[in-house]
Image (cartoon, rainbow, N blue to C red):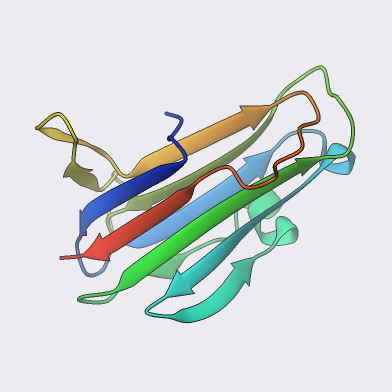
Length: 129
């Protein structure tokens, strides 16, 4: 599920786990996610995303701002994809409020196959319960 340029995910229960991964022809792109957790900045780097080695457990009241970026060095035949989501301790998607009512998964993905000028895909604000 792709996300618009700005999205709010809430509520994110304490103990939820931020996961992310990137797939595609490794030499054709660079992916990263800038993470601002309660005002403290860190970066999930390309190497972590391509190995799927991303796991950040949320605490009560955490506030995340997540800025995924995907830069293609050249056009590719098969799209490059970056995914980001919160899951519970059992590995199920965390469900959040949907703008139209009801619920939806706290999950986004973006795919690119052509070089584009703007590397930032979206800004996701995740608010703890």
